[in-house]
Length: 92
Image (cartoon, rainbow, N blue to C red; front, top):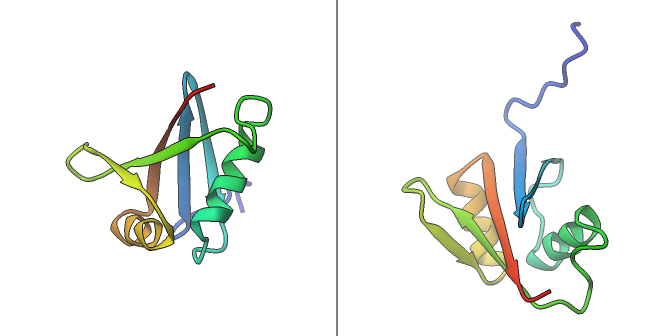
């Protein structure tokens, strides 16, 4: 073993808030929209607060930013890509 994590087949979330970009491996692919928002609040602690209005968008295969509005949108996005490239928008 070479010390590398085996992430083949795993869901990876690459999230961007402003200039800050984070890469997060996801072990439970049945993540809900509310769980995703909570995760983003933890990942971007101090920059994204629980009372902030946030819009989450993912980049599709054409490079377009598609809004994730609820858990069904999130589930569809996960089905489309193993690396989910998220951008967070809001007023803070």
